[in-house]
Amino acid sequence: MTGAESVVVVDDVSTNNNGFNIGRLTLNKPKALNALDLEMADIMLKALQKWQTRSDIVAIVIDSAGEKAFCAGGDIVSMYESMVEAQGQIPAFLETFFETEYTLDYTIHNYNKPIIVWGSGIVMGGGMGLLCGASHRVVTETSRLAMPEITIGLYPDVGGSYFLPRLPGKSGLFLGLTGGQMNAADACFVGLADIMVASSEKTNLIEQLVNYTWGPTDQNSLQEAVNTILNDLAKPESEPQGNIEPNMALINRLCEADYVSDVVNAILSSDMQNDKWLSKAQSTLAKGSPITMHLVFEQCKRGADMSLAACFRMEADMSCRCGESGEFQEGVRALLIDKDMAPKWKYKNVEDVPKSEIEHHFTSPWSKESHPLSSLQ
Image 1 (cartoon, rainbow, N blue to C red):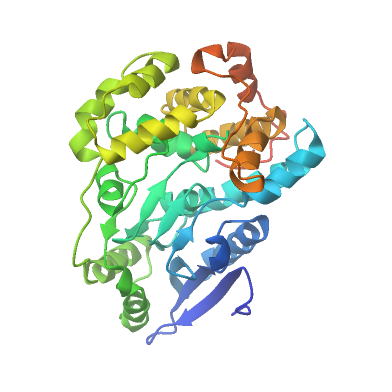
Image 2 (cartoon, one colour):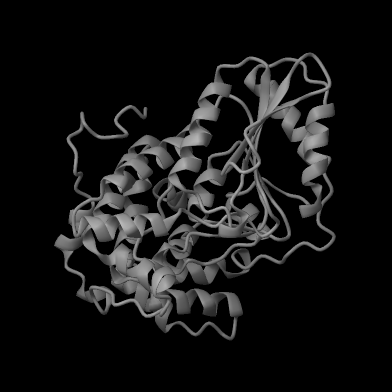
């Protein structure tokens, strides 16, 4: 095990039979809500790559220190500092960060052993990237999931281009545009989580994994074993009521238009009938970046027909372009640096954003051969 002071605690947990082990990665920056930085992503990626080839490792658990958050997003303060230094160029730090983070997320999506992500508490942005690709995505009564990049002038990355357009109806587009928060019931309904259990069950989960009689180690057998263990965990005493399922007809209607400006205006002008969840989503969109509105609409449109690897390559292009445009920098400044909550967006309204501005975000800074994610298949 690495020291408890490490930003990610890496552990081999011995089971009680046949010399099998559980790999465990614990995000360990609770004061920062376990926001994912470059060092954390690098540690996790290297550990997963190592465990992938070890026949004694039968499953992986990714969890976090503290009760408040699994992972509240990427470490955008370090990104901000690199953008300030780069002055309108693509910061080298951003290239490295996104290459590492997206390779990590892609590795989780395509892993050859079960990965259990304990998505309790806040799971946002980069935390969603870790959760979404796992074979076993666990949420609890305290889970709050979202892709709130509209508030900082970025867009729902970490595979959002792949998973958002594949959610039921137009829910993915709506969640991307509004940063709408999902509880455990919502996450299970849209297919971003597999099971809801009580938040007090984490220690029991580890104990069950340790005590289980592990047998055949082919992928299907391991997946079924983990299913059995998870299904035996206690459910929350009180399960949250979902917000997405009862509002699906409205969400689909608001997001049905073929142009982003029509969709945005439909949401902003809709009578949300004093529904707290819908009103908050509407309010977040109203304050959000008009450039991001276009990027979300376009990524959902393009990503719907793209492979996961192609989506991550597109997102590496988009994220680096966001790093040079100034919008992302301004959004982080307003939220986390000066904390004035008053971003000065480049354009006032969604209709004001020129087509050329958006098209530029989808042009790659690299050739096909030199792309940092060219090896993803």
